[in-house]
Image 1 (tube, rainbow, N blue to C red):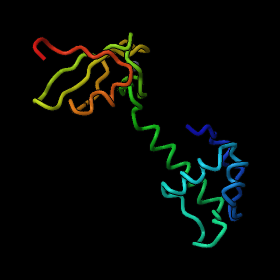
Image 2: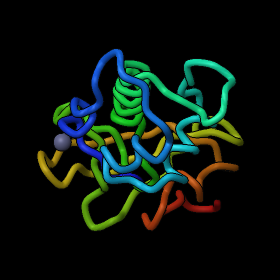
Image 3: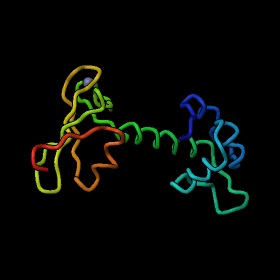
Image 4: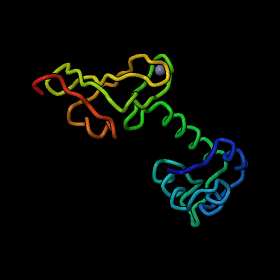
Length: 141
Ligand SMILES: [Zn+2]
């Protein structure tokens, strides 16, 4: 993952244009990372070469990307309502509680507050969602 900080993006000046290389240098990320942002919707000022980005457009894109990532639970994490944050389950263990034949909830314990944390999941995506978490199934599954 890229490792820029919110404080770094303020170094990009509003109203100035930047090349991919300049953005990479300013934020301390690779050029490929910047090209990847471009591919994910960061808007250049036009179709010209070299591709130029406006400082405010870059800031806006990265702020939005960060906000989005914050809300999403990474693999192996469940959202704890009490902590209001994604948490990796205590002991890396979770129970699968089926709701239908293909869908259910993962239930685990928050390592911070000790409360129950849940994550809705389909059986098909179980592996992708769980990361390294050990999932216990009810008898007979
Ligand atoms: Zn918690």
